Length: 219
Image (cartoon, rainbow, N blue to C red; front, side):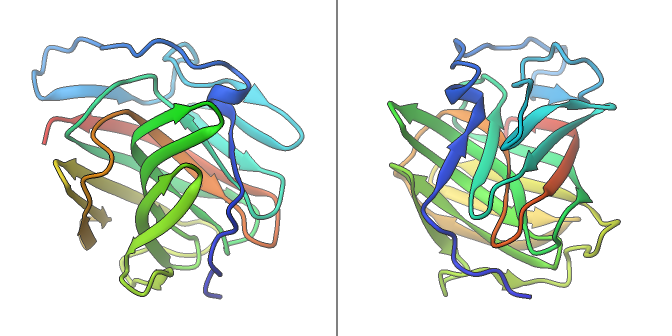
């Protein structure tokens, strides 16, 4: 079933519950590599919260986002400050309704209780959307209909895992799933910020998504 337009209700656990940390800059031998994480160690810098409303925590070598309220998004950040990048991650359905949404974020920043970021989302029933959140208001910038759109590139169902790839280069944002480009848009409002993982519900609760094998590189 096609997801409806999102309600303007946003919940962030990484800052609201755990506090916003000073951005860090990991060092790697590969100069093109900005950040990587297989979530095998629970000390790699992500939020570790487990609660009745939502969970953002390490779990069995994955990173889990679980959402137990209807109509909200929950996310966690890595604690970085980046501009141009490419980001890839494995995202797998773990439980709950397939009418869900999950994906990645770039250029995340927060001022008071207002968040801003670019997002790249899919659902377990085969839809996608990408766009931005500014002052907690979400705008879908692709597809141009302003709503989610179906794609056969997305693996669907309760055992589905997908490789998500987002690129944030200057004002050009693009999104691929399992190696298939889904679209792109141009927007210059957000210049830099953190990366993040995100999952959300519509009418039903209990969404659980596992993330793994995250790689962030210079574009």
